[in-house]
Length: 309
Image (cartoon, rainbow, N blue to C red; front, top):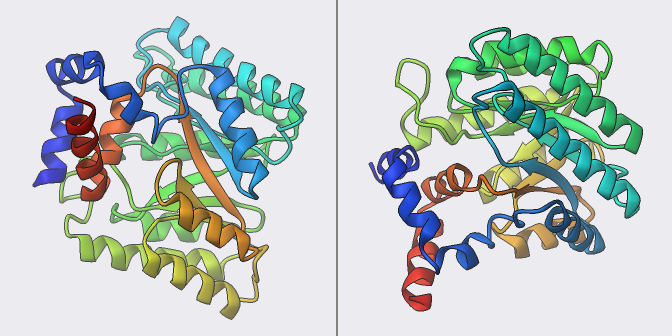
């Protein structure tokens, strides 16, 4: 119920206005968001690479309401990948792109606009030696996102997909996406979804995650294990050994600001750890989903507000 309440708050215009204008909020948000500018993304990337971690950069912004806003998303990704290249940091970096920010939900030709914009982002990434992963959003966009993924992979076969373990369809999606060369990020899911399409109980989500992880690890693709759950991290390591992947045939992915000590420990053991780094002015929705995912995040936020207040 707490998670549902927080996600409802994420949709509240009044709550957003209050939290965004509190003087004490921004210093707390910096735990989870690199900053508002391209320079912030470059700064955090340099820091993470210095201690052996990799990055996936997410320019925050969802549901572009017009073509100009969708084109601004393209320009933001072009700017950040160019800045990374200038700094010698682009090789191996990943750009995490939400298609809704690229125009997917526009009422006229939304899918075509998003596809064209995603192609432009992929071309910029390819030139700099980076990759792109298409973020997954709520369940109503899943088929559209996977369709755009198939189109992009005709020219950019390295484009990554994201699947969410709390959706009932995801086991089959994992089977479909586990082919040779396919990069697939498996996460649990962070949107409020109805019982008809998504598991509601945490234990059911965990079991689904484990099943999906097994499918991906036994497949021919490249699994990206997005989890902070010690049990799933341990399971991934065991499956990698059992399937002969070793340390180089998959990677762990974790969120910026969440369990950074554990990220460093795993990286120091020789495994690949990629940190999902959001940046940009539109941080509110992302921030609220992070609070909803883990009660510890909400406790940290409230304690920090009380201390700074």
